[in-house]
Image (cartoon, rainbow, N blue to C red; front, side, top):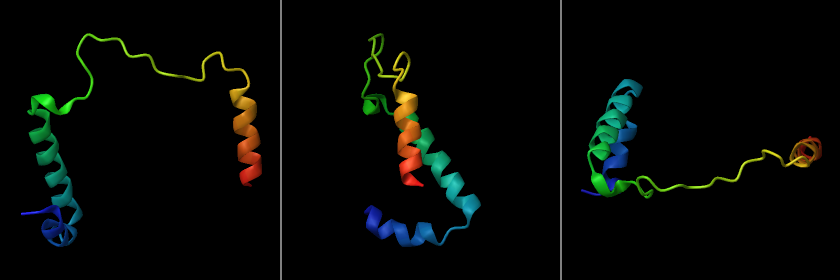
Length: 67
């Protein structure tokens, strides 16, 4: 069965049943070993705005332009 076949039935479910379905699928995925793209014990560096002093100014400028 494909997702295209399942979607109409899923959309008809009440919100509580959809949440139960999400939990069931999440728990099932949690048991799959090869789903995580990150390797254990490896350091991954993330870009952050820390010490980016112009970032706040650029954000305010973008927000003012959007208004």
